[in-house]
Image (cartoon, rainbow, N blue to C red; front, top):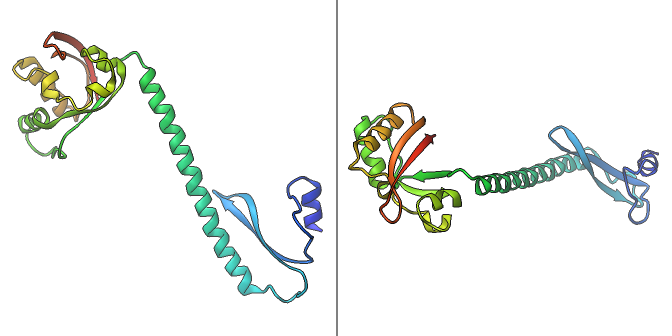
Length: 193
């Protein structure tokens, strides 16, 4: 019997009393069989027909999708944990800003720069970035307005932002003159993406 072979190979474990009548379908995730769904009966050999097979296949498909979703969620969570550890352990200042509203990239360059300066704030950063600006930790730095960091009266900073916008929001090797939390001028070499 198939069940005896599976048990002998260690691929199945008998739980309870063996049932002489059973119906099983595979649980498949991404084309791989990860288990089986089985129903059993102890006396009526006619209890399982095509209708029951189709129902069990449907249920098996739904269970497999739920398992796949859970595996995907777990993989995503693990990836996020690795990403956050990577960012937090970096000695380079890493940060992300966001604006109150999305900026329409069809607007002219100057208008996009003005909107960035008006509403961009630090949304995420690592401790290394916060320390560069005189803060003890990222938590203290998050929420800081970009215009408080990047002196908007310095024409070089405006040119950097214009170049950033005009290069489809990608810029490498840009030197900026910025202010820390005490108003001290800091000069940074930036890669912006």
